[in-house]
Structures are given as structure tokens and as C-alpha cells.
Length: 248
Length: 248
DNA sequence: GTTTGCGTATCGTTC
DNA sequence: GAACGATGCGCAAAC
Image (cartoon, rainbow over all chains, first blue to last red; front, side, top):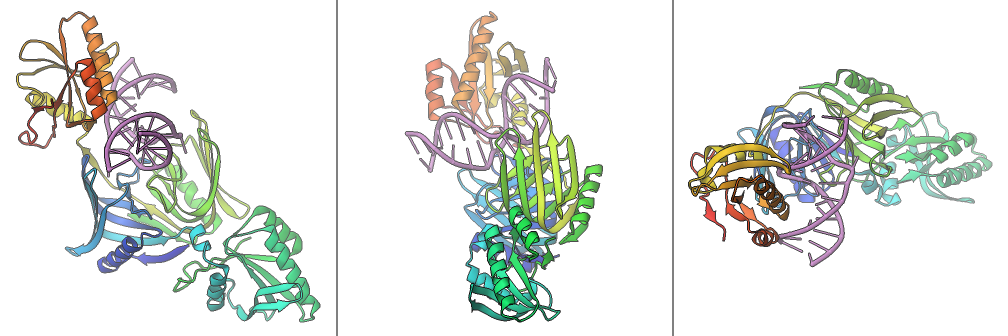
């Protein structure tokens, strides 16, 4: 969900970050910190240097929020041309368009934090296989100390997506869901656990790994005594920025 | 500048953070993460789950931004009542107001980061009021020989922005438009002229003063026998950069 | 592309 | 409080 997070980024790093976003026009970037903003176009405005929240969205829109008023203090609905560069030791962002002719310039004097947010539904639209890949590479996203033993394991009741062993040495059946975990997923996991237990490997633990769970599925899960762990995994994630936390 | 920063805050910590902000009504809080939002009020209720940026500002306003569109996907301009509490293991935010009766509820399913930002200042120029100021100081921008008699003159049909006398001694109603003159502006000018004429001051002339006029407005203007003069006025301009020219 | 009309418009100012 | 007008309105449909 949050793909990158830069703390007090240097001008060069922030410029690169913004340029990448300009190229891909993907996701949402937010920069909090000290900034100076000027606007020329239908009106003219200048903002004194101050704390602000700069938001760059997918379509190329830009908005700068101050601590008061629900409206942004400066904005740009869409851009024909955007650029970021280092000037006088600061990252400088240009955004302009014609019809009407407008220009917004943001100087990041002291960027405190830059975030790269991605829509859940977007990342979740990646295939379940890719999520599986990511979880095999980073099983700690599901639970610390987890070791993946097998994947796509065929059993009588169907197929187990991920078969693992946890820190306590218990066998664990993992059912990853790229989207919302539903009652259906809970039922499937229950069937799989029952089948594995019948095979006589001893105590079997189970984990439903999904970004979120629907209320009915949560109740069903409780009734069956199955675990759910809030898990998000994306193929591009270089390191787990979102640490797994127990859902409830 | 940035006063607090909570990484993957737990429901209790986030609730405390929000409650403090509610009490002080100070600064700006931003929360990035997976959230569910419902709204009831002027529009039909909606429910969304996804990556979002929640911004709480000083006056009590709330807005939730999705990765697309410059506008927030949900918002609340000001609040009469706000609260935060833990429910079902999540931080839940209520914001409501009466007149109109509205309610926004945000469930922070997975808050990734909470920020507390402070202070920024801002000035805007080129408003219609400032254009009026400039025209009062330089009525020749509208028409040579024009004398401004009054501004913001209240009459039955509303308010006349500028009331003047031209070189021939005629009463003139001036409607300045900062941007393009539209049919709406022509109608308003027509109403004002009619009202003034009824008051019995004699012949009344009228001028729509704007940098541009739209074709439909131009036709409407012709049909009503009103004058349009291409006029631009900016407070900072030391000399009239756009000389007044008769449009047609 | 431009123009028209709507919106959970927002935001002042005026009454 | 309600009412009215301006807005860097934004936004989508119609032309």
C-alpha cells in the first residue's frame, strides 16, 4: 500500500522520486514539510514559506494544503507539463498547462517526509500468483519466523496455496487472498485444515492472509477458530514497508 | 513544524492523537493508510475501502483523498461534533454537523502513518474586489471620461458593482468580470439597468467590463442593447497593460 | 476542442 | 442563523 517512504529526503533523491512519478503517472505522492509555493495564471498567489502538505495524484494533479480551510491553498487540476529539478540546493517542482495558461512552482525548502501511496484495489488487481511469489520471498509479511515448505500443494480437498512451518514448529496452512477475505475463503481454509489434520501431521495452524476481511467472514473465522492476519504483499516491494500486524 | 509522527499507530494511540487534535483544534493531521469511509447527508450514503490520505484541519474540517481526482472522495467542511474511539479493534472517527445534517465516519483499517503539521501563510491577489479597486482608481481603463460615482451600490434587484457617469453625462452601470463574461453576467447587467431606469434617473447606459466575452453572451448582449468593453485591470500594473478597446 | 450546467460545491459578505 | 454572489471553483455531459 505504501511503496516508498523517504525521511528528510535530500534534494536529489526527492527530485528523482518526483521524476519517476511524473513518468509513470502512477499512485499518489505526498510530501510534508517546509515549502514555498507560487502560482501564476487565472489569479496570482504567493505563499510565504511555511509548513504544508503537497499531494501529487495519478492524473498529474497537484495540490498544496495549509493547516486551515478545507480547500488547498494552491492547486493544479491537471498538467500539460511537469518537471522536477534541483536549484539553489532545493528540489524545485514545476507544473504548468495551457488553456488556461497557468503555472505552479513549489520549492521544497525542507522536505520532512515523502510517501508513495498506492491504491489497494490497484495493487490487489495483481494476480494471486504474484502475491504468492511475494509471500514466498518474504514470509515474514505473514508472520515473523514463518518458513514456507511448499506451495500449490495438492491434497484431497483441493490445493493448498502455501504450506509452512511457524516459529513454534507447527504446520501452517496459508490461504492468501489478494482482495477481501470472504466467507468463501474461510470455508476453503477450513476444509484444507481438516484434510491436513486427517493426514496425521499433528497440530495444524491456519492463516488467512489478506489486506482486510469482511465482517461476516470474520465471524465465520472466529467460529471455526482460524487465524486471520492482515497481510499485503506486492511483487515490487523491495522491503516490507508495511509490517504485518495481527488483525484482531 | 512537524510535531508528531506515528508509524503504523495502534488503534488506541491513533485515537488519543485524534482526540487531542479535536480538543485543541490546532494544526493539521494527516493519516495515510487503508480506510473505510461512509457518508450520510446531502448526498446518498457511500462506502469505500481503499488506500487513502485523511486530512484533518484546524477548523475541524475533514477530507479523504483517493489516488485519483484532485477533489477529495469524501469531505466535511466543518464539524459541530467530532469524536474518535476504538471499535472492533480499529480506530473509528466520527464527524457530524447539523444544518445540513451530515455524518462522516472513517474506520482506519490499517493506518500506516500519522503526521501533525503546523503553520503556513498565504496571500491571494487578482480577486474581483481588487479588479474593482483598480477600476475605481483608473476608470479610464473602462472608457475615457468615465467618473465613478459609487460602488457596491445596493438596489432592489441586487447590487451594482460600479455606478458611474460617462463623458456625455449619462448614468452608467458597470459590471466588471475578472474572467470571461458569460450570459449570466449579461442577464445580471440587464436586470440592474432595468431597475435603475425604473428609479427615474433618465437614460442609463451599461458596460460589461471583462477581458473576454463568450459568443453566446455577446449575442445576448446585442439583443439587449448593452455595451461590452474589453477591460483588464490588475492592481500591480503600474500602467494599463491592456488598453481598453471597443469589442465591436 | 469548447460550452453548459451541476455539485455533499466552498467561501466570503451581507442582512 | 439564511441568502446571495464569486471562485484560479472542479467535473462531466453535450455540442
